[in-house]
Image (cartoon, rainbow, N blue to C red; front, side, top):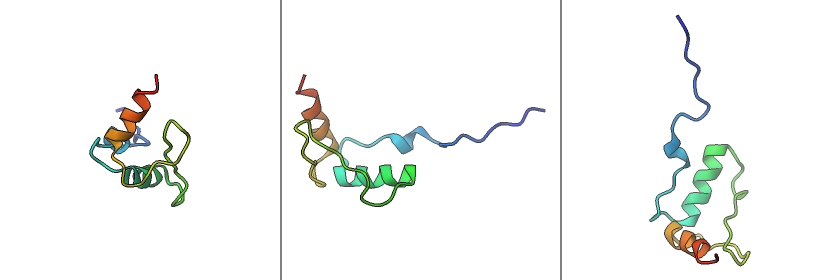
Length: 68
């Protein structure tokens, strides 16, 4: 009988962020999932500036869509 291999990442949901979540929550979740040190993830705006932690993911995505 064949044994099944354990997946490295058990669920895709770990990589999905809700659009109503904040940038700060997203940064913390990325650090947690990938085992990175606190403060090592920085999310930036199209202008290159760091995004505010209280900005929503939806607003951040809209900023990136409108640069095309």
